[in-house]
Image 1 (tube, one colour):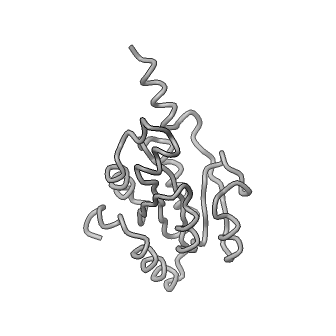
Image 2 (cartoon, rainbow, N blue to C red):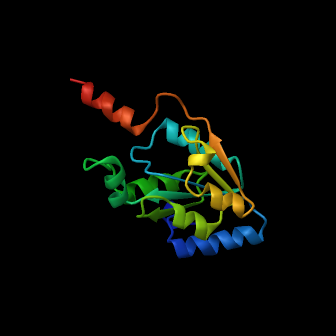
Length: 161
C-alpha cells in the first residue's frame, strides 16, 4: 500500500483482502471500537491484538454509531480522522467502518480466525464470539492499560481550570 488511506476499505474490499490472506494461510485478527481519541491504551491494546495473528482488521464505529453509543457530544474526532489515525499504525492492516450498533455483520462476513476485545469483556459477552468459535476460530481478551480511556481523558480535561 502506498499510504495509510489505502488501508481504509469497504466491507466488500475487506472480504477480498481477507480471502487473499486466508489463501496465504495468514491468521486474521478482528477487533473493533470507537477509538475516539487515540491514546496509549488503544495503541497497547491494538499492538497486543495484532500479535495474536498475522493480519488485523479493525472495525471502526461511524460517527452516527458513536453518537448513539456514547452520547450527543461524541465523537470528538470524526470518523475520517479516527480511521486515518488507526490506518497509520503499522500493526493495523485494514480499517472498515460500520454503522450498526455492533460489529456482528462485519464479523460474520469477514470470518476472522481470532476475535479480540479488551479484558473488560468476558468471552460470553463479546459480540460475534459464538459465530467465530462456531467457524473454528478463537476469541481472546487482552489486558488493558489501567487508567487509560477516552472517557477518563475527557473527564480530566473537564476538571482543569
